[in-house]
Length: 469
Image (tube, rainbow, N blue to C red; front, side, top):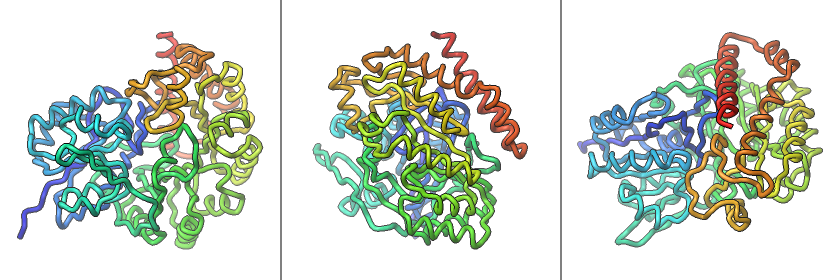
């Protein structure tokens, strides 16, 4: 009988609460930390009967560099599938270099936003890197490990000094195996969960919408079959998970599949609350009603701006009136609404940002996330920022959360943007009426604890940045 190979799924250590997943890396704005979805989905492709599988999430488990290296060395992996982030590149690259030095024969494959362009440069500069995973939804890393790279999609590697790019294509619904949630033993938490433990579920991959500031439209949209998703939901229920974070970029994009899953949840009285991302032009009243019946607690919508012009310019392709309408429908159904807002795009003025904050209050969002625009790799938004002279093409380290502002707008400096972001949070969250509303709507101890912890971290962050300013 052949000896099983050891496969390690690794989220490396860091000096901050780094969230490196889904080709978007950032510092946690508060204390939240979901499972790293890239690694989670990769575990679905490796059969435990054929491989010894291990997860080390050094961020969630609060492991130091020394502790992480020692644990990796003890495991003796044949392959490490790891995360790497643009936000933490200065820490991640030296860590992997050290790992390769200590275990020279290990193969290292990485997924992350820091590796999505200039493949030859990345593979030659980072000589510890054997494989770039450009589609974590597929089985490319497994095919490569098993010596059949021509069967793989979503990987880039060097062969005889030449770069081989085998990018994934849009596929039919995948009958994917259940990801191995139980391997992830870290302290995972989400700010809107009203029960624990939480699980992350991905029913579809990427996004077919062309928003220019987002990497998702450059990836091949793929969904899972309804049967595959239901099988995972059954597993999570049996294992005692009590809250689900659907991390799809656009939940309900695959209408028939999502409808079948939600109807099953209603039929069996699934009984687990959940949250998701979606778009205001994707879900109508009937679909929102079904989501509510199936246990939806909160929907995150990308609102972005209070004006139609940037919504069209950056190809959101919906209007301010559509935003108002969908928020109103969700409120009537008692589904909580989180609006994400983007500040700091080229040419944006102070008045536009303040108007966006007022709009967040007007639509009665339960929560608001104000994000500073980031010129992410492989996006036309980055090309626009370089063309306008707002950043240099060499800029690689950037934080999607905006803790460190990467660029100004041409009208506003980076420091001015940071101050306006802090003002946005104060204006929205420090209203007495808002604070009373939030306290009145807390339903249990878990929700109270989560709000208290997250609120404390947000407040500390604002105070800290104000002192720096």
